[in-house]
Length: 246
Image (tube, rainbow, N blue to C red; front, side):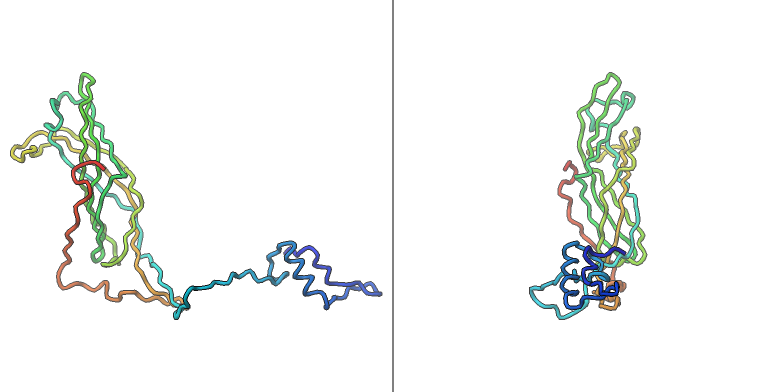
């Protein structure tokens, strides 16, 4: 344990060669030595480093509002769409050499809701799709949005809980040609291209609770987890860029 420089200045040597404490100046010089060396060892310096907190208006409670973590888990979300081949002008199935899909993570729009023990997520991810054919021609790309929806089991989650998701990460992009799909007019079954994007994120569910000075906790809404008499119905808003890019 280190001491401040000048700590022994509070003692004098008597005629017999023994050290005696110089009480009339020990407190002042001891404090001064602490300040000069910046020593923070309270046992040696007895300095008080607690800042005084001044509030604009006094609080009448020693309780605080905090977010309690209900749970956190890594989940996958799958965006999938089958496009009619006719969207790519002049392309024949046999001529396709490669298909390139470029997702726009910054353009993802989604809505999240919590029901009892589940987190439900519905969203769109904008993508740009480019096809290269046999002669090396790159067909003019199209930009569209691929829908995804997931419901994640989350024991303990209740309506009014707060959901936080980490930024989406792409785990894989898949395409498959020759998949049957209804044409753009909605009349015929035609050849299509299946596009699938697998996303990963971490869902964290939190709940506002009141904590007292002894660590006791009570819910802000003690009835949030009661079963409703009828199933909840959510009419979600349309995303800002439906069917298009960001």
